[in-house]
Amino acid sequence: MHDVARAVGVSTRTVSRVVNDEGGFSDETRKKVLDAVEALSYRPNVMARGLITRRTSTIALVAPVISDHFFPEVADSVQRAAREIGLNMFFASTDDDLAVQHDVLDSLESHAVDGVIIFPIGEASGALVPFADRGMPMVVIDTPADHPNLRMVSSDLTSGARMAVEHLIGSGRRRLGMLAHVNSPVGRRWREDGFCSGLPAGIKPIVVRESANSEGGRIGIRRLLEALPDLDGVFAYNDMMALGAIRELHAQGRSVPDDVAVVGFDDIQMSALVAPSLTTIQIDRERLGIEAVQTLISLRNGDLDDNDGRMGPVIPVSLIRRESA
Image 1: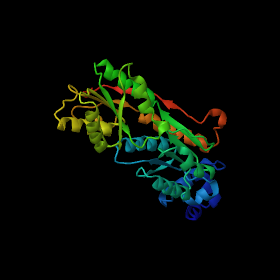
Image 2: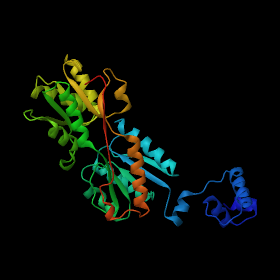
Image 3: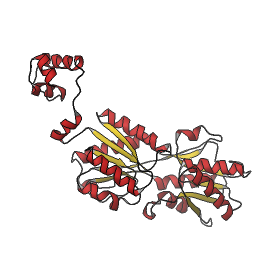
């Protein structure tokens, strides 16, 4: 900044006002300062500026895993939404481990990020509240939050599960099972609730819980077939489980969808590329990213209060019909 000021013949305060677009300078001065900034490759020190403004123009997205394609796709959406308003984004994974989640949040707090968007592990209250108490604004995805510094943004997961069941029933399937996520907290089994409540009277819900990945799908489908040998329809917690289930069904000589129809959840890009392509419930990742970033910035700026509610927006989902069901 001193180099720019010296080159132009103005004070460092004038350079700061131009760089931060604070006004109080002429168009001629603005042009001279910006030309010198470009010529000298000047870049503001974000951390130094943050000591004064208490803002670093940086947010973070924390996901449980990065091996599931859904979370990098959400990160892409969040990053675009953040970039639109001049923010940078960190992306971190907790490996679905509560201790790692604590360490990640501790690190982000030490880097003075302006706020965090998180897919939390377990219930939000115990793990996140200490950070919220110290002033960290957080948007929690698909998790109820009861704290002034926390807001939930969610997709309509229960309705999505009902859509999947209605589609399976509508195609003549009657012996249905669900592959659920073993780590879903009891109070947040919204996909499972939608599956069970969507079944017609007389059809008993059969649910097995495994890891929410392709291997969990393979193991889970074996368990479903043991419980229901004439299984003809499957709803999976996410697309990765659904893809693992399809692979295992083929290995056991079952045709998809002729013998068993399969519906996933998320609509990751891979779901349209496999054979058979996957029928799934689509989460609007673009809108999720926009809503999460906008809610976080409003929370950070103090534009939300308890009268706004802490549940935040609920984003509709949709059924994407492909070959597997």
